[in-house]
Length: 463
Image (tube, rainbow, N blue to C red; front, side, top):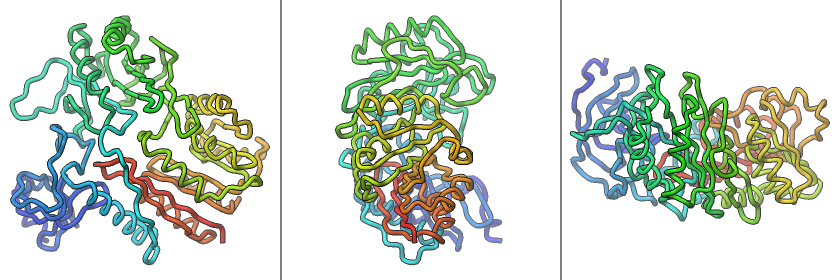
């Protein structure tokens, strides 16, 4: 076997030929595929083997022997150790070309579409400082770089494939600029107040996560400090933060006392402000609670929603379903064009926000329901909901549950618009719908420059 010729830790020279979906560079070695994190096409590199599998190897980029003509200098000092960005060393024009190619390859390979027709990807005008939300982790277990030393609290991002190691972050170049100043300030003051970071192995400590949210078009800023228990020192910390950053409009303390490594908790205490922020998309204004989902690129979300509006071709006789409706943004954005809109969402805070958003935007022909979508439609008749003409789907990365697909094939709306940040599960789900539907449009939109993520809009028409 070819794999027997190689050992973990062995150094090899590779020419990067392509990019894989997910952002790793692709090289070939003795007819084996090698995946290399932060490798870009056109480079010749020295790499160290980190994993050996039956059909492929994984390797770590050690040194660049020959630069790629597409290579640019990364803006961020944390690149490539941080897992937040994968492509900062690749020109943005080339990033878009590879994202376009990956959508094509996915629909050809997984979707089994012969020569799929993919519209030209819509790039982002804002290439840095575009994220309106970031989540950082407190820890006492830093990922050491060179000879750096750390205080007892590190505050940053998980190193890829390590649940326990945190890279101390000073300046992130994809989040809003003001977050960097607040991030460093909170780390410093947490140390001075002698607050203890949470240890994910021993399950002891206080500080777990720090979540930023900002309304780009409203200038409203939320801090959500997630702790393992209630502690008066968090109020003291908040007072110090507000004195230094008076632009912050609300601070929330979420309590997660479980062993689960998640920023979602059992309680939320509003320390300052209203406990939520607002953001605008076009003429509409939306309330966003701490645990409610909202698209993370406010600069590009109107482009996304305007395309959905255009491709849906809604008329005043149409009933719209918005599955995974979050804070109601898509349903509200489209409702004025339709007879009726219904939103379905599993997160209670998001449904509450959605109802308030509809009221605040004077939209009276939309109703939001709370529940798990894969089971909710079993109760559709009890809810007295009309049959949908157009269904908008924007699910999490795992895609659709089989029950949801069965429901769509039973109801057979005339048009399905499937929005996804994971084209692989999107193409998989499409395969189960294609017997009754035809593909009429595939439109990738880049909401996440310098990362491998792509937002893709797939439009299906009933045969």
